[in-house]
Length: 67
Image 1: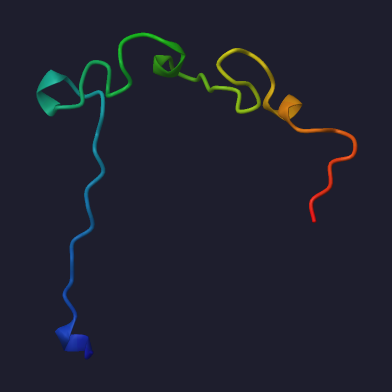
Image 2: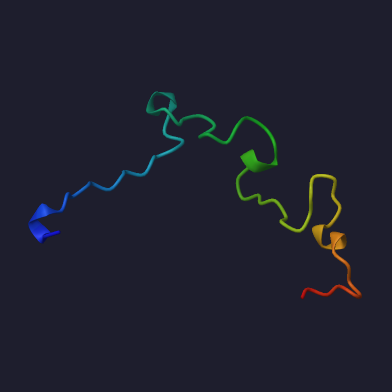
């Protein structure tokens, strides 16, 4: 493959969200209407599941050996 045979593809433009209904990703900006993930500045705690039981409680703390 030679340099003059390469096909140059334009990089995809980033989607601007929250810029009005006519822009396609307006109003809720693809987040949905309600819930924790639709609020600004909120993150789900990765250590907790839906039923609020910590994920690390699934693993044994003593006698757990990986060969």
